[in-house]
Structure formats: C-alpha cells, structure tokens
Length: 104
Image (cartoon, rainbow, N blue to C red; front, side, top):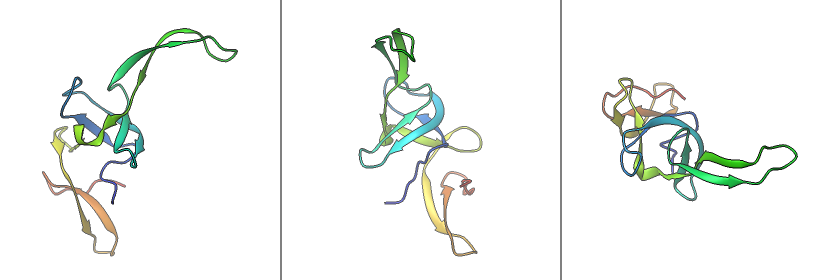
C-alpha cells in the first residue's frame, strides 16, 4: 500500500483527546498503522537516571493511529490524499481538497 502520510508531513489530529492539534510526523510505523507526531499524544513517564540522561518525570510522544490524523493542506485544514501519475510518468501525492501536489 502506498504511504499517504510520510515522515516530515504536517498533520492535524481529527479524532481523540488531542483533536485539533497540529504537528510534524516524526516517525511512521506502517505495519502497525501508527505514526508519532511532534507535540501530540503526550504522556508522562518516569525515567531512571543513567550516565547519559537525567532522571525524573519526562513527557514524550506516543504513537497515534493513522485514521486519527489527516494531512494539512496549504491553508492548514485537513485534506485527504490521492495519487496520480504526473506528466513525467511518476506517481505523486495530491491534496483532494484543492488538487495541489504535495511536495515529496
């Protein structure tokens, strides 16, 4: 299956506790249908002190399901992603809301 959401994309949360928040995709896990988005789905975890890291309670992002996020269009609103073949014969992603090509 083609990747509709990729690392580096700007996305908006469309469902769940963080609905309406926006952020950048840090990591995508296609086999689990999840993605990690900067600043979204934050949880607090107790961290033991190590030689490299300070201990204490830290906040970190946890994966969110791909069905709960949508790519943002040029105006910042959620859009669905489609695929089409360009004039050069390459497959490209485009925003279904405006029809504009999504930079790859």
